[in-house]
Length: 406
Image (cartoon, rainbow, N blue to C red; front, top):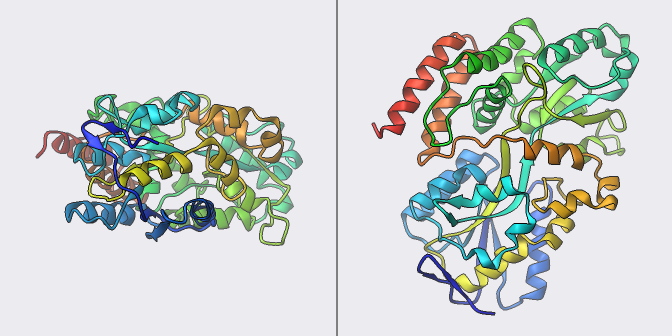
């Protein structure tokens, strides 16, 4: 197989490489690497496991790039890091003709592009879903999951009158001061018809629509719709709260579905929940577009092997295989249309709809500074340190300064 080239890069050299990603809590990475290593004993891949926290992952990858180290070969990038890593030339431009991009959902493919070039290949996508207690909604006489925030609150009020719902909270997402808060904030803003930035990355966050979105989160904490402890929730905290029966509704990624469905006693809601699109202000809301793409470190060795490994890891066959380990959203259209997969993973149709209507987080050069500003101001509003209006005004000012390079 020819090593190929793209953007002046020659993909040469074969031998051992590393794969760099966050903590493998589901066993997915090890299962894929075992398959590769059995087939390629002279080109083995070693897993470099980074912390669970996305901000810590990004920082370690940047440190490796700054020292031009060849310790990291293939990087698993959060989709929002693509522009930053490409702009700094920390990763190589990849040959588009080596990957079946036409078979993938278009919004997912665009996450790997930067200025007309491909810099990372989608390995998995992700869309936010509304998990809800089917048994409790049915007992309360509610025929369908809520489509708007007002319906969510009204439905929860009816559910909480049931003896079976005594002590339960209504709703939670991921509201701790980390990347998950950026996601939840952006979804609230987008679901109210606002935007954090426009298509060119210019800040648009100081708007009535954005305020309506942030007001929903702030107001829900004040009126008890969201429990106060949710300001400490990351993904796993929220998952445990829902699985233990503490929440009627939860905003969460699809990875929770099989965990909550386990009938081994680890989940109190097995067989009693389903998923729906996120609600919004006037109708269905919009998820942030999540997921991870594979990129090739510019300072890596054995790039011919790395390119083949990226093709292997991002292939349709591998994604079909990994669905059994972790239900991250597949990138290939065909996997959402396979009747056998839909029967086995009934969240797939809702997940596809979430992805096709998802809104990317800001695709900006300095994403780290942008998300830090969002987290700081959104958290200040959630905890009552600032009003929604003040937080959004300060955020708009900070984002403008960053966009101007000040």
